[in-house]
Length: 168
Image (cartoon, rainbow, N blue to C red; front, side):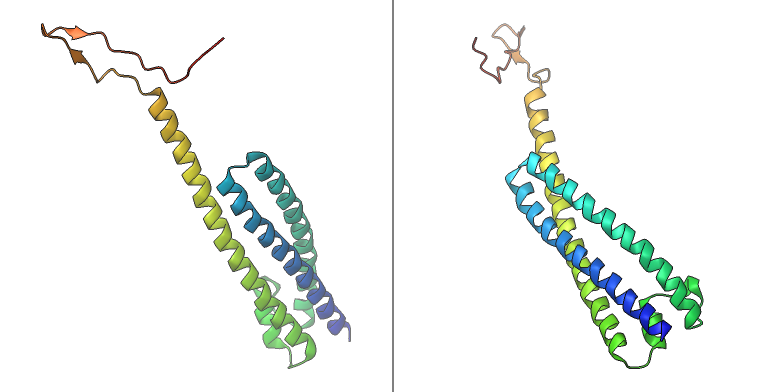
C-alpha cells in the first residue's frame, strides 16, 4: 500500500510539471508574436514570467527525484538507472500505471512542442540581430573605397553621407 501512495504522489508531481510545461508552451507561443512585432519590453516581461515557471518546475523536479529514489528502493531497481519507463515496466496493469503512462506521453508531447517553438523563436531573434547588425554596417560604412576621380585624374574629396537630418 505504501508503494501505491508513492506512485500516486509521483503522478501528482508529474501532472503539476505537465501543467507548468503546458503554460510555458503557451507563453512561448505568445513570445513568438511579440518577437515578430519587435516589442522588446513585452518580451522582457514574458521572459521574467517564464523564469518564474522554470523555478517552479525545478522545485518539482527535486521532489520528483527524491520520490523516485524511494520508489526505486521499493521496487528493487538501481536508483541510478531508474526512470518513468523502468517504473512502468515493473508495475502490473493497474490504474496508476495507466495514469503514469498517460502523463508521460502528454509531457513528452508538450516538451517537444515547446522545443519546436523555442527553435522558431531563436531563429527569429537571430534574424532580428542579423538585420540590426546589417543596418548598422550600412549606416557606418564610409566611402574610403569609393574614390571619385576628377577630369585631371586627381582624386576628388569624397562626399560625406548624411544619414540623419539634425534640426535644432
